[in-house]
Image (tube, rainbow, N blue to C red; front, side, top):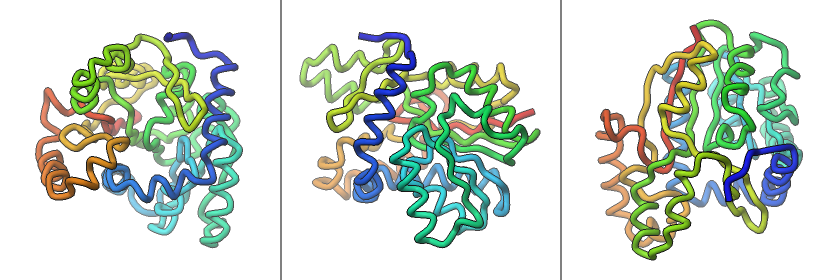
Amino acid sequence: MAVTVDSRLLRETRRAFDGVASEYDRSNRDNSTLCEMRSRTLAAIAAHAPAGSSLLDLGCGPGGDAETLARAGYRVIAIDWSPAMVDQTRQRIARARLEDRVEVHQIGIHELDRLPPSSCDAAYSSFGPLNCVPNLAVAARLIADRVRPGGVLVASVIGRVCPWEIALYASRRDWTRLRVRFAAEFVPVPLNGGTVWTRYYSAGEFARAFAGAGFTRVSLRALGLFTPPPYMQAFAERHPALVGGLRRLEDCLGGWPGIRAWGDHFLMVLRKA
């Protein structure tokens, strides 16, 4: 049942990510679909923020993006609500000897006022942390206050219309599961025995929340429109040639109007005035 997120639900979400932190990076690296999606997010960051820029990593998880971007010459402030994920990131950055390029803080996106204003040239969020914030419009204002004028936000967001998921659950006649992404409020999503409270957004809903904070949409493309979603990795492994072809098709057509907001995620770039 959809409910409004409160502090209890935030704590449940944090516990769920704490519970998977030790294996999260490995499971992500073993999932080729996730890796392909991540590479497109990183490419968008590189296209809109020159190397040497200071970046705010919103929901850094185990720190894979922060390490990659630091090695590419960026300076990164990495935050996460999960203390176990923050610990994984700190260990990772220490092993890579990148402490001079990456700051790591245990801060939720809803707590961004703990960071100084105008502290970064750009911000990014990979694989849906912004789907878990209590109030997206409030989060948008907090992010806007941390990003310098002219800076961008690059966000991969879990969307509402995922054709693969609709087809999968329709074929099983699981109408309850099929409707989950279309709920108006937050819904419980299982994660290895825990619960992540998630709200799904259309691209329009997401852009409007950030428009109120002074952001204008620069670009939008689908992630996981023609290719199956990451949880269908077993299918992708059985049909690598098919999925490779679908991935190339998505790269060609994923930015087309009318379909660019569909898919497991959408990738949006917004610029602060």
